[in-house]
Image 1 (cartoon, rainbow, N blue to C red):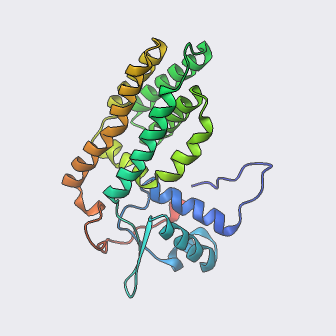
Image 2: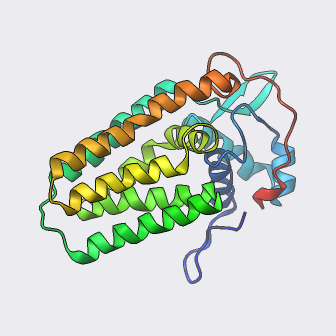
Image 3: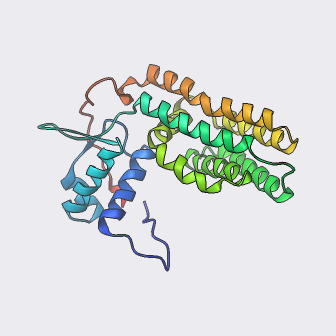
Length: 243
């Protein structure tokens, strides 16, 4: 995985770079729930000392994304349904309230941008590209906040939803076809373009709450990903792709 520094911008410190890479790997499921984490292996594969790795794991533990068991080791935390529910509550409250407070008519440019996003979602669906679809999903919801003049609220939503994002990615892979999500997004945009914000909010709320059904389905198939006890010791996975 490439560094997320930008040309001309400030260089990330070794700790910040390591934290960014590991956090992204956890959320994107490159490091799956329950995976063991070795400071020595991570340091070697990311070409840094153990200090930034150790500091990053401490910060990820504070986010609830890493668990440390004395005399056992560090592991990627299992998905916590309670944290997923809390994050979904925040997201629904912010996004639905924002959309309800929007003031139509909306500019043709805003609608055109949303439609373009929807078309690209369909392209990602056709290509079976889950990572690209997830990125477009994020852009879509960020655009909905911007439509109502609350674009800056995305930071609040984004900061709260690390556990929710893992559940969403699991649902894309295991339970909910991308086409279903794209169709739900389309229903929201259709209602917005028609000027029916009540219907748009209802469609958005239903879409956001679907994650609860997904979590139950995923737990039935892959209970080892969810927090119902100490993480198991899975076979160690390489993280060489994180460089």
